[in-house]
View 1 (tube, helix red, strand yellow):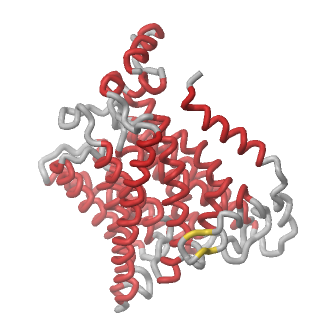
View 2: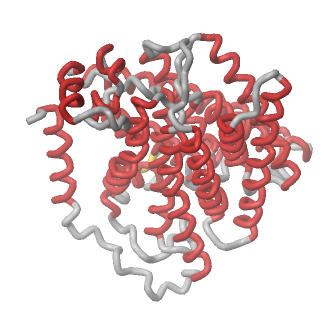
View 3: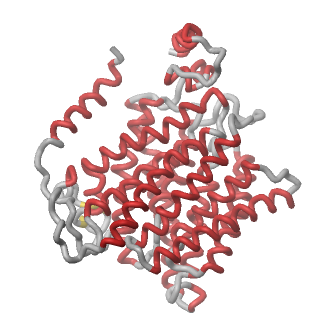
Length: 447
């Protein structure tokens, strides 16, 4: 028996037993006059679209790493759909959207184990859709955020320690940040910070956690050598799934089938298209080949950059945001590579920086309150929020990596890294020539 898995299995059994308790709300709302059928139908679809983004991310990341780490990298995204779902039900949703405690975090007792989260509407958070649907929609955001971080420490992290970290990250960083940004009584929201679909909550938090991970864990043994992506078609497939799912991510954040959703759908489309072209053309100007990797990364950076602004800007402004995000991120990738910091898949330059650009330009272009409309307040508060969220996420993430490492060492040993995480962590291999006997031998060697 592998003793390190006993606590996790015990927690799952306890969760299953506690879930048998009647938390109420499951059958309410069937005759709620505030329910809107069109809004509910759209949000059911949007929730499914956002969930699709996490498998899309697994292909996007999995195609970029070396062949011996494809399965482990993809699994790190997939497993978030299991782990974070249960964390969200148990306490994450309540910490994010429960009764506000000082504007910084929700009361964990408010909706613990989805207590009172049922089919009725909820005036402040879900005025026209079932409250449980709102909770599930927000769950998908909570799932993909720690999955985004995995690209920074790909090819060298111990799986069991990774699971511990994402639980701590979800509870201690993601949920409070979601509360501050999206809860009606949240500190940042009441301060006037605009984040339509997750520029701060998702992308900046993942980006700053990623740079903390890269610094804490150090470089891969092979860092600095020639890296050959395992499967560029996987990257292209993942980009397509992400782009498709992002319509739920951004347009769904309107929380209804309305004009805001249509605008967010349009700005999402054009920003990603503009960013993809800006990335590959900038590569060409710098003497680099126009590549499938470049087109894919550019498209995703555009999606990141438009996320906080999606429902607040015009289509023309969305084009500018996509182009600006792509060029700035491309430049940061180039200079990051000169620092020696081994953010394996450039999570900070793409998601962190993309989110920062998006938040700043939201403060510039947001209708009626942006800088171009003569209002400096929103812009200055967005600039302050960038520093506040960045410092909060980086500092706490570094601390959580340290804590996780003390409980279960986060980095695999040199032999396991050399063998590859697919075999050393999971006993699986993409290579048809690797027999079960050889896999067993390599696992034994890496233990």
